[in-house]
Length: 456
Ligand SMILES: C[S@@+](CC[C@H](N)C(=O)[O-])C[C@H]1O[C@@H](n2cnc3c(N)ncnc32)[C@H](O)[C@@H]1O
Image 1: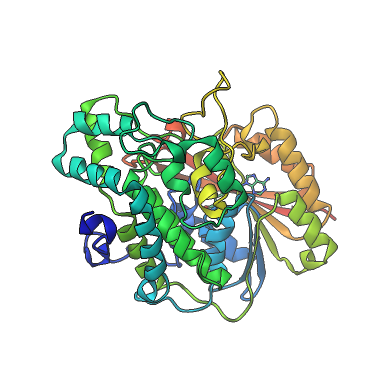
Image 2 (image 1 turned 90 degrees about the vertical axis):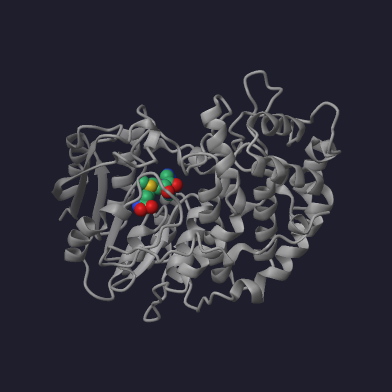
């Protein structure tokens, strides 16, 4: 077996990813995922109004936190409670808001490298021949041979004829079923059995599984969240799509294949280490204790009401989904990374094959992302919050939404709140961005912030 395959040159020495973190914002910001509807680019505009509602040391609840760009920006000023229904989001929030220790660039060597190597070596005992072949083809750039190679590597639910690399055993339902009952069994093998030659290349999958194995050896939950966030970032760099995980690019033309080959050369480990180096500059806040939740927002409001914590909250920020794109579809792979649970995958109409996107069966379907239910969803939201607390509510929404014009949303808010101040006029164009939400990115989008004050 070649040296590269058994013990990859640890590419943290590669300078490609080690450019300085750009920060044009006046507030702390850290991007983990390219996230639909994230407020990172709107922070300057948004902070102006949120700051008017908040005094130093106040408590701020971000009920639909996503990548916690807003909570992290406010971290120097207020205590932040962050919530989201997706587990990957609570991991990102925990890394940005709860972790109060230090990160040093040699943390990987000290805490993870040994375990990474152990898992990677074991995977190479199984997949090494195929990984070597992949490496050879990626270097040669031969599209035809690479496409043929992809057809010769099995994945979960799709064994291959002839089984050239003797890997079909790992694609069988019986093997995956066994793993479902022994999720942390060595070696970690989920990505290399579920996603090879779809969202990621074979070696990239081995890197993901091996970093994930190493992370599970860490005891401190918040530090673990930092490492998992770095791995999510690395996956979003390596993924064969425009940064989300809804669908991957097919070999439908030579041009597409060339893009895929380039993407497959990205080292997950190098990207992971790049993000880790950025975390050495994480803004740390020790004056108060931030908290992160992973609930449906209604359950959280109920919980905070019961334990009276809701009385501590000064401002609640609402940034719900506003298009018909379901987050659980666009980000199912970060969810699986965090859960690492060998999920059941949705089947196609024939009920014989797994769907191409390999979506989890248990995906959450948001009622904010459905034209038929969005109005009711907002009524419930305003009703649930206004009946439990007199805190001010700040609501982000946009004219790119499924409930438009925004006056319809304002009319609903007025049923529950005394005054609604509308901050608007912010518009931006997603033009030039590689990442478009739902294919609708290339136009100006007007953003609104509704400041809702309680009745009575
Ligand atoms: C527009 S995004 C929030 C973006 C965030 N402000 C940021 O900057 O990254 C909406 C979020 O709402 C979450 N979500 C959807 N339905 C939810 C529910 N019922 N309870 C809690 N969170 C939910 C989604 O998972 C998603 O992360």
